[in-house]
Each structure stands twice: as C-alpha cells, then as structure tokens.
Image (cartoon, rainbow, N blue to C red; front, side, top):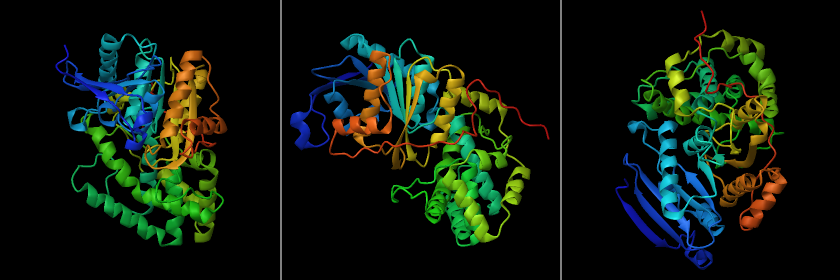
Length: 449
C-alpha cells in the first residue's frame, strides 16, 4: 500500500525564458511499503510510450536533461539512493524498489511500451544491474559515468595508491581506513605527492604509479584537455590526478567496506605490474614514464621489480563475495546496454568498461553492448544534449532491434540536433586492455605465500 501520493502539475524548465516551449508535466510522489520515496513525472501530452527509470530521480530529476526528455515525449520515474549508514549501495535493494515503481506507474498510466533504466555514478551501477537481474521488466539500460560493479571500479585504482605509497614511503592507510582524520590524511597524501613532484625522480615515479592503476590522465575540470603529444603536460596532469586520488578513493572504499563488516574487498595480489606497464597502458602515459625515467636516470625495470616484489594487499574472500551481490555484473547481459563515459572522470576509468565489453563479447553478447566516450573532465559532467543523445540511442535500439550509429560524428550530429546551443564532445578513445577484470561469478582466492 502506498502511504502518500502528491500530484503536482506544471512546467519544469531549465530557465523561465524557455517555459513557453516546454511540455507541461504532471509529477506524483509517494512512499513504497518499505518507506522509500518515489517520484513519477509524465508529460501531459505526447508521451512516446517509454519510461525512464532512475535511481536518483527523487533528488536529480529536475534539470535541463530531463526537461529536454519530457519535451521529447519521455516519462520518468525513480527513487533516491540509500545512504551508506542505512545500507546504501546495495543494488539488490535499489533494483527491487525501482521495479516496484514501474508497478506504481502502471497503475496510474498503464503499462509502458518500453522501460529504459538509466543513471549516473552509483545510479549507473544500478541501471546496468537492474537490467541484468530483471530482463523481463527492463528493455535496455544506459549507464553514465560508472563502471560495471564496485570491484572493477575500486580494485585496479588501488594499485596506483599502492605503488605511490611504496615509492614515496607514505605511511597512510589505503584500505580499511578507520574513518577518523580522513581530511588530514588526504592533505598529508597531497603534501607527499607535491614533494615528489619537485624532484626528477618523484616526477618519474608519479607517472609510473598512476599508470599501474590504469587511471585517467586528465581529471580536473579546471584544466583543458591535454595535448597527448606534449609529455611534460601529460605528466603534469598525471600528477594532478594522483595527488587527489586519495581523497577520491579511500573514503569511498571505506564506506563500501563498512557494508561488509569492515573487511577489505579490493586487492593488489595477483597483478603483474610489468605486464600492466608494457602491455596494458595508454601510449601517452607509457611514453611519459619512459621520458621522465630517462631524465631522472632511474632504472624503470628495477622500479617495476620493486613493486612486483613488495608485500601485497589481500582481500577478504567473504567480503568479495558479498560485494559481488551488491552490484557487480556478470558480463552476460540479456538486454541492450550502453555505457557513456567521460575520458577525464576522476572516479571512473573507461578501461573498466572496455573490459566489460571484451568479456561480454567472449560470451557471445557483444552485440548487446556499446561503449561511447565524451572528451570532458569531472565526475558525471555531461552536457545536457550528450546525456539525451545516449537515451535516444537506446530508445531507438529497443524499438527497432538495431543499434543506430554510435560513431562520434553521428553522436555529435545527434546531440547538436537536440540542442545546437551546446557543443557536444563525443570522441574516439582507445582503451588499453583492462587489467582488473573480475566479475560477479568470479572467485577470489588469497594467494599462497
């Protein structure tokens, strides 16, 4: 039984000046039986039969992207993400809640012809997860600025922290942080990386450490896209990313660890860092490392040996199994799945999504998956027409059974037609083979000493 229903009718617009062009909408709100609040917005005319399902819709459903989507005939619905201290980031719970919202929508408006799950960041994890787990209710999924689960997200990145900690003798926890003095620790990390950047040896090892986690070179919205042929600039951007990596990752990792008894679910065991550097690295990053090692007079192979021979961080197998259940993907999708990435996202490395595509292809599911890239920095900082273009691609795919072109030129043309006032930034991007491929049915075993 629904505890509360509130109906609001009116215009939802990006700016008052655009209000005359916007389709009026009706928004309803209520509570699911477990107390989670839901929200539904339906255009008052011209519904195209597609319902968009979004984990963060209660808190993120008003804005220029959704305004444009309403004007193009989409209805939208969803809930809000559960806070960490209440068991948040468990996709099983959120996916079940979203399925209930479809039922609420159907009782009011009839069964939608198509349902597309969508979202960004953790909402993107849930978007792909709900499509995998409920293929009878979901027709396709668009995951923005996210990775296919929490282990493929956080495990490879740990290698960059691990290498930097060894190179620069940083005495800070990178797993199982106690939760106290986190900001002071993040500042100490930045200070250590700043000090390293002041020396030729430090600059070389900063570049190598970032490379070993397959991290993005560029992550700051304050910086323009790097010239990948300017290796000094490439290294400077790698430094900027590594100095902020502690603040990006360690508290997020701790919040997830608290969901599994405080135990580590990420690891550095089993990685061959020589292989990662020589075979699974962005060309401009590898070139920068080589250049700065030559300038510093350091032995690159010796440093790779140091990292390979260092005591590793092991995960708790039970914690890995539990995190798997919280949102990791099987790489065997049953519905079309589109992943939309920013190449300069500080929290998401596209290599993880490329690994998912490769693994799905091995399972004969490659025809269901597409990966697109936007040449921008910042977490989830898409322009509105870029986000809408991704939805329109999926809507066409579920209706016709055929993927429209996802080539950058075609995507930019589509986005420009959606809003010519915004310059779209879809781009070609060559991902390295993913070093951290570990999926929902894989088993973690602590290596024997």
